[in-house]
Image 1: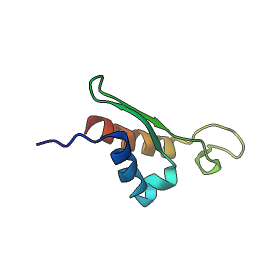
Image 2: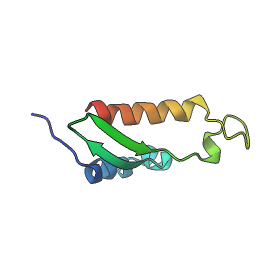
Image 3: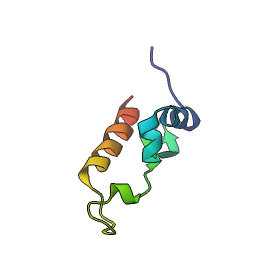
Image 4: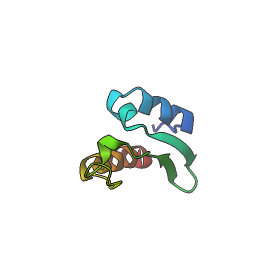
Length: 74
């Protein structure tokens, strides 16, 4: 039996994980009919490839993709 989570429930799971909470992810929308999960991942200085570059380093980007993908598929 699967559990269908709404946006607030997914956000609570994000907030309950120290690492995911540190990423600053925020759930914007869940559309189960369309199979869509929209999440905001704000840029932080710690995520930059080089100081003041504005470019994402692959490590944090991979973490965001892994986290959001897991919840999108789940």
